[in-house]
Image (cartoon, rainbow, N blue to C red; front, side):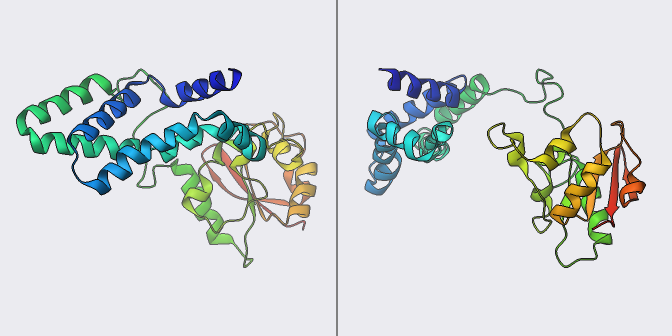
Length: 252
């Protein structure tokens, strides 16, 4: 009983408001009643039902959380072709009932959707600054580093707020820690990240971390107070991008 409760909790967290999943289950019923193609029925209808049965099967849940990871079980829902199923059912509906089907789809989208620029999520969603859809300062900083790189393999350390974006732009740049540090389960014991996330920057400790991890470039938030002078520990200011300072470390 406890496992079932946990599985339904995971489902509720995955489904959000539940509107999309309700529409998906309606789409499955529609596909089951109207779809004649055996392959489409197998993939969209039978495949979805089979995966959902496995997701809610207590023994499968127990094996997964025991031998894989309890916190990632919700990703099993990614195996359910929700988007494909909704798109296919909508296309079939429009094909079979052109005007009525199209109007019904538009009504469903209008009632079930949300305007992301309505201002209700102020500060979280905004217009993209570039085609990469990542902060422009990340791109500028990475380009500065690439212009001044002297080693065949370049190591650079970034502040926590940039970890999500750096490797989206340039996967060749090596980092002593990555976005996994933003997860509390993984960031324990990484002294380098802890120093970069600290309220005050200690460049004596950062110099040791850079030397140990072969880091040549260090990007820090210039608004943070400094416990000591960076130049005293082998750091040279290379450039400034907004509130971020890019240092080259020559102490290694």
